[in-house]
Image (cartoon, rainbow, N blue to C red; front, side, top):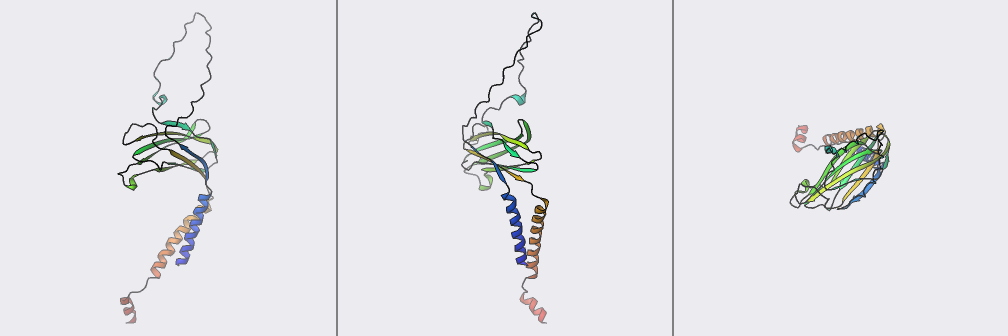
Length: 226
C-alpha cells in the first residue's frame, strides 16, 4: 500500500514538473534606484485651422484644470517594459523581488497592456522589510497572476514607489527591484485530471496502509488468545 502511494506521489510530482517546465520567461528586468526612463517623443504639431472669415474672433485657449486621472503622480518612476507575445489561454505570472530591501518599503502598480493602450489587467503589490519585524511579516517578493484570453502582443506598464523608514510619502525606490514574468500555456485537461486523481489516490492509499498496517497492542493479542 505504501509503495503504491509513493508511486502516485511520484506521478503527481512528474505532472507538476511538466507543467512548470512548460513555462517560458518573457521578461527579466531590474530597475535601479533613481532610474528615469527616457522622455517620450513630443507629439506631432497640430496645424491650426485658418478661420474662413478673417474678421471671425479666434477662440480663446482652454485653461480649465485637467481631469484628476490626467494629473501625473509625483514621485517614483513609471515605465513600460518591452513587448512579448502571448498565445490564447495563457497564464501570465509576474514576480517582483527586492532582496536588498531593509528598513524601507516599495509599492508596485502594474498594468498588463495588449497592443498600444488596451489595459486588460491592473494589479498592485507591496514589498516591506524592517529589522524589528518577524520573518513572516517581511515581504521582499510578491507574485501577481493574470489569465490571458486573447492572443497578441503585450507589455507591462509598471509604476514603482518607495521610501526608507516609515515615511508614507512615496518617492524613488530605495533598492533595486527585479521584474520577471513567465507565460505558462494551459495544459490539456487530462494532465489536470491526472494530477488530481494521483493526489487523491496517494492520500487514500497512505491512510489505508496506516490503518491496516497498525500493530496490535498486547491487550488486543490477549483478547484474541482467549
